[in-house]
Image (cartoon, rainbow, N blue to C red; front, side, top):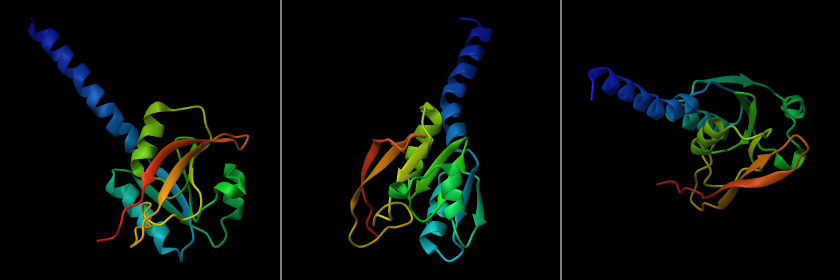
Length: 152
């Protein structure tokens, strides 16, 4: 095997390893209330997983939820936008990374409400919760199921 072949194979392998990490590190814009601590904890969760996060604080998120197409049954306390997708609520960074890597035809991901144990909502009595993939027509499918995390 020639040096050129080994170098080309090494470069290809490096791209296979780096592409998912690059997708996971996309810039996210988060629209949140200035008074919500769990939103700040979710932003920290996303930063801890390599995302560059820009926050926009707003007193009322109704308009941003309407503009991004988040139906009322899917709503939570904050709305984020990344690479053309909407991320509503306490969606785990791993699910955002999978969304960005697989790029399904969808409007985005949502964790409706504020389930205890979801990222930013860790607590003493964690709940199981679903991450929903939602479409522009409002239809949803379960994208992932999680058992919430307990605070130490």
